[in-house]
Image (cartoon, rainbow, N blue to C red; front, top):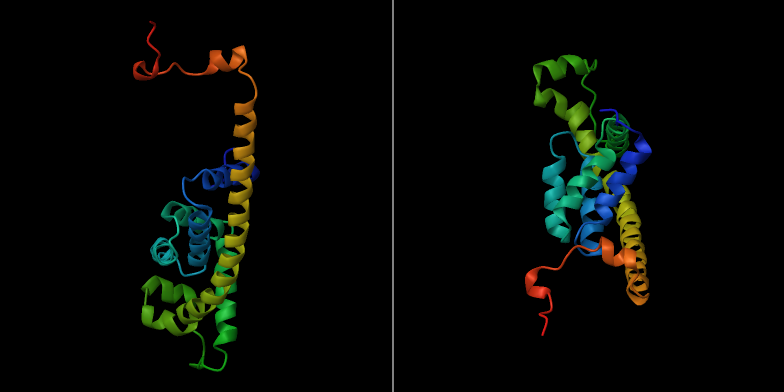
Length: 187
């Protein structure tokens, strides 16, 4: 679980993977936003929700899968679950019924009783996940779209500058040989 080198290096790798995807800036940004949105829902449904939202918004599925790791990683997961649950409890404060003494969550998880988990845990998490997922999804859409556009513009300029300067001997030495069909025939 702990990165081999550092968290900043892992974050750099993740961002480079997203920026180098071969899709439009909208598709990549929509995919990342879909993954971030899906990360706020209960465990086990992240990829399915991200894939569905990618399909709805014409997002990139790979970016959606990578986007689920933004908030669906082991470090941020307890915060996301707690925030979704608390937001849902606030949203449902008038609708949540008190059933006497609360049951212990560990007992409910051991017996895996969905009917017991629905009212106190799952329902508030589902209701709280929607607004938080929308807010953070839209935020990451803007960040990713801006980053993709800036990265591609910078790359275009770098390639244009490289193409406008005269060839150097190190450029020729480092370039791979052309396939036989592209070589000029002597004559």
